[in-house]
Length: 268
Image (cartoon, rainbow, N blue to C red; front, side):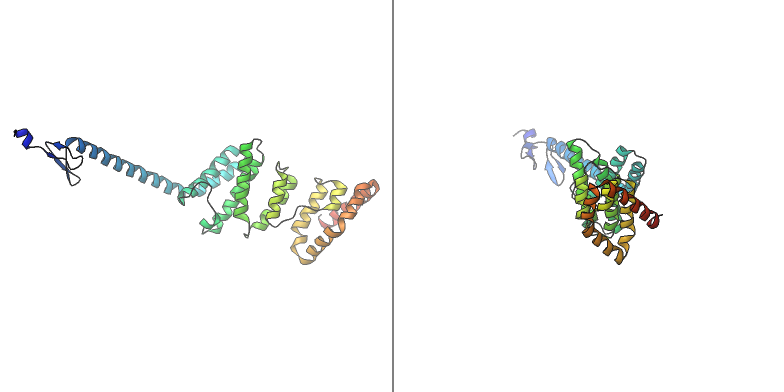
């Protein structure tokens, strides 16, 4: 047997006979396996370092997440809607990453803080109205998604009542593209569509006088028991009266005088 053959032994990694085996990872391995194992070890260390860096970035973003929400709100108020959407969606993504969630699976149950749940409602409220202006099917899908999320984060909360009033105002003044969806959302939050029958028959649904009476109803009459009783009685008795007013110019003129006088007494 030659001297070269005598020095050969079996590689514990690949099983081949080879000379010059060296110890690596607790094994006697050949040169080729040594290179491969070192390369794999390097890859593992590189991947671990990369993952650790990603986690550090995520943790830092999570700490700063409220800044994204604030930037989004500022941009929304300045009508820089593209920047608002970018920052709002970044805030939501940071939360999903922080909770290690799939996209779109964030729910109120993930929050211990009611304050941040309220912030989520406010963000979805803005996003929903932004995509209400969209004209293509993709934007309609986003509108539907944000409306669903807004309902999820708002229903049965202490701020539900506030958003019912906000919805009524938006339906009246905001000229929403998806009006029927907003009316259904209002119903889902326990609200009712506007039913100022007589004022609507007299002035029209978008007239200033009608809007003033709706606001007076929502902000004043609903605050006390007698006011709520008056509203419910009005809803029962006023439809036939409104129908008569709608058919008669004389009754419309008379109703205008009466309603304007009431507005001066009640509101001014």
